[in-house]
Image (cartoon, rainbow, N blue to C red; front, side, top):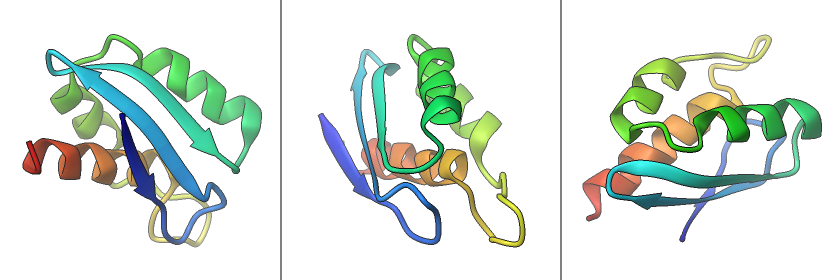
Length: 82
């Protein structure tokens, strides 16, 4: 299980797990509860690189990031630290 401390978004942290290069669970702590549960459910079973490609660079309002973008950064960090 990985934990990522977010920056610049409503969610405070993201807990997630990767097995065989697939996302097996995602939990956002804080943030827009319903939307983030939906995103988490959609990502389960998805290839990590594919998720990064879809989420990276998404913004929320005037912020230069978003909860999905923060997850892409967390996934990249997890891959780089293996």
